Length: 344
Image (cartoon, rainbow, N blue to C red; front, side):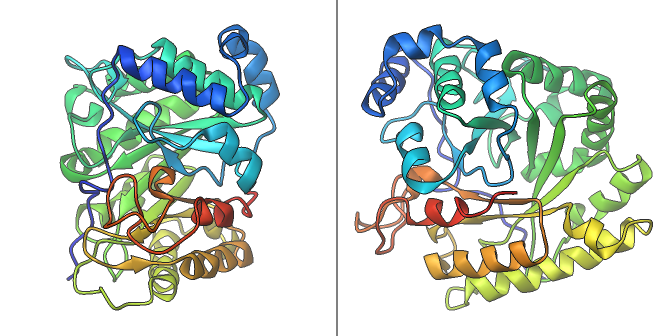
């Protein structure tokens, strides 16, 4: 049985939200043609109105404040991407949501970046969890408390979608997480709920394999099931495009078995892929051509989401794989340009 992947050092660099990060974020926005005054005066309400029609299916992961981060506004102009998935919200001192479990939930650096993206015609999805850190699913004592934590973030950023990146020890809290999402959907019917999970080469395995059944029993509060098809081990020579397609088909069968009332088309419309660009921690190589294979399959089946980890790494010819380098030969933002072709 393949090991279900967890995002490692290159897959989840923990941003530290400090005073200097605010300077870095504002400087990046200025470089992208967004002035400090535009970022500061672009109110959340006006920005949300502008973002209301932005498709959220193709939203690459990005850190909200970190050094060597690509400018999101410039990337929007050159790649066609109009949304980003901001990572990660973790627990701070109990059942309290905070950026990386330490920063302020609504610090000016993050608010300014979100408003700048929205004022430029884009929008954001906020992701909870990831591979490391203290997860809200583990820290919140009940589904109601967990739903309350999710709701704080939804309210703070007027979100249209949230992503639960369920990994590591939080997988065991899957029933609680799904019940919390049920509460979120009851209070926010229009908010899209995304579950992002690891897979093995055989599809959903271990604790992840139980999640679709839990979702079906709860009335299917998960709108989109996104898989992370990488970091398997023993697949360094594999074609990661065709392997991803194979795994996605297996997960489709698993979701269909759990949601017997849905047609094939309806199940495909609930599926997504979150790949990784370039070299993975397990020394697999995901190429731009592999991304094109995934995009074609996603479009053929009218799937809901195509994203990757991360736009911060979407540059090449910069040495080995790291949190700021794909580890392969490529032009800047090559992978983001492929995702930009997906308008789901």
